[in-house]
Length: 318
Image (cartoon, rainbow, N blue to C red; front, side, top):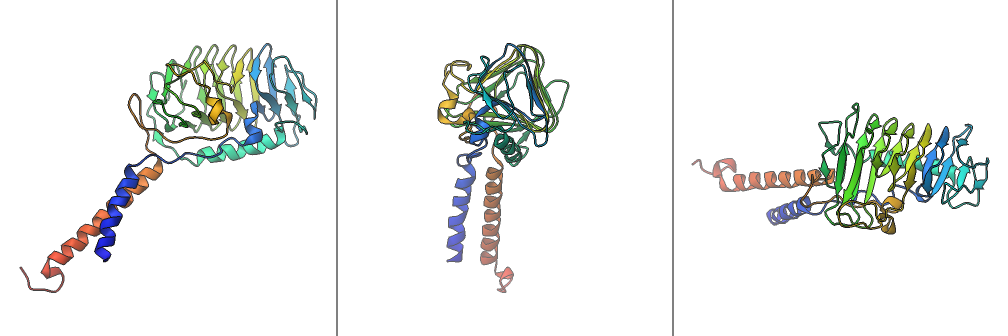
């Protein structure tokens, strides 16, 4: 009976190890945080004109809560022609997104991203020329993390997620490009930056930047499918365009609105992906289940050996 249990358990473990990757998250960006396209701590500065789809906010406990380059008033949600939402300087009430609560949620979101581990550790700092399937990637520090074009290939699947772990800085060269191709509704991109992020002049960037310190977008850089969120420092803008409404700016043939089913709108992060056309990254749970399956094979083999060899069970020698 015990042998039958082991025989049953081993195929089950193998099936689990080879099955679909588990969901990465259910709520990386909570409601208040998801409401901000730009969120700073020490300050938010802007050289007009910028175009922001969503809210702009700044809040720091005991800080100046300084916003420049936008219409702003301490404690009041203010309209600005550069912003489709409101500008929230300090603590505001009665608004759809609260900057104070969002800052707390940003700290939690950064912790959540870190919990997914290092994933695949890329050997080079520069992502240019890569064609990456959904998964978790660690990117080393370098003079630039993007000198050309990075393609994020969703393989036509919905609810896919890319998480880039950058233990130090995120730096892109001028005119660099992040392109999403063959994506589905709910796909999400997160850049978890250990210190500060700088998006170079005229760069076309995509994804949610969550930086421990600061985020700087150089002149005319865009992020038309993501956010700039700084935990302890400032967000600095210079004639930039940012929005979480992703319709029509994607590469390939899809051009879907990722925000419609969550994704970059913060509701849900998706699953790791499989398929052709890019690099596939197994999740840590996959390796754990595969290890358990190998352990089961080892137990089964030892028991078979001891049963069939009389010398090992006290019987007559061969």
